[in-house]
Length: 354
Image 1 (cartoon, rainbow, N blue to C red):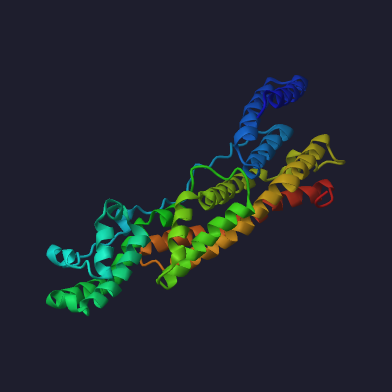
Image 2: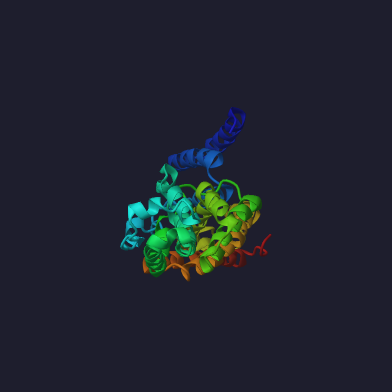
């Protein structure tokens, strides 16, 4: 935010504050001033507009309302150690592994034993194991492998028997998958369909692969996108925070018409100001942002639902189910938030949406 814009905001608010007659009002507007500057400079429009409307209700009705906070957070993604099962290592002698240079299995083992290969984990490691099973079986049929053919077949069988366990470990440790399932520390500052589509395409690619693990040149690229991009994690944060703020704000709107003075004859000026605040802030700003968040999150919820059906860990399934619930929680809390305003409009004689 530029210094010029800051100065304009400060000047406008100072003029308003100068018109206030009570010390209580002056203190309230000092709070509005600090919150307004912070919100304008850092918060996304959807969340900052909710705070703005909250401040305007507080000032217009001259009542004290508890501040809106995101203090109760959703559960955290379970740690890898809680999701990672233990399995016995595949038995194949080191000397045998050194004698596999004549077949593809030797190359895969060498790649896994390299410095980069030892760092590889998650779904990429699982995919390499799947390739190794086929490579070991083919290598066992090579004439040059006759002396240790049985050992290769046994190693392949052990890997095959451990498929479910290895997949669970892969899901528990994959950096890209864990990143896309983890709520970010900050919400979105801009709602972008382009960035969202890029991340969703990668997530859908990984889920499709989990449904049918097979050779896929797209898997590695998709996992890299999920590990590097934070749009979906920030979308999760935006949806969860918006839901929490609406949940806190709604009970504070009881008896709006009474506080605005509409129960007596005529329409008081404070009721008109409150009506204008709702139209200007919620209808023209917040409502569109919430609709965009809901539209995008519906696709995330559908993807998490499919993912929950594929993961073997009950803890991870419960975690994903919790997040899919926001697909209905956000619109439900939005509807609940609008209801007291509708009652206010009706009691005070305002037309809906105008």
